[in-house]
Length: 141
DNA sequence: AATGAGCGG
Image (cartoon, rainbow, N blue to C red):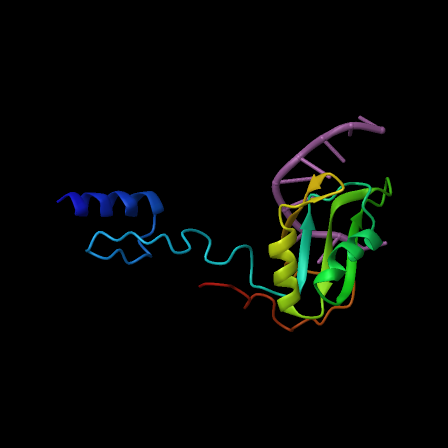
């Protein structure tokens, strides 16, 4: 009775009963939420929370220690010419991107904590290999 | 000019 109550409670909290809770009172945390931390892992990283004084070279220099950086891009405002506070770092290998994300996410660069996630596929401008169909790109459906 | 989550040049 108690165990069933706790199970129901846990299932209510987590919303979806996607975790198989064993009947022997073992509640395993596993990876509780967000099966994928941000998106499907790719070699391109979205770097948010950048200080407005960070340029592409310093950003590349900050991430070059994790692997070969192919492309570094910072979003600048066309009007004011200042940084929008986010950018992109593309690695040669996804493994290096993962390592860089795991190591630099939440860390401070020039006093500001970085928010790193994998970049979305949507690109306007730049070296892109555009597949014919965009709509068939859904993670879990 | 300032602004602080987001997805670009």
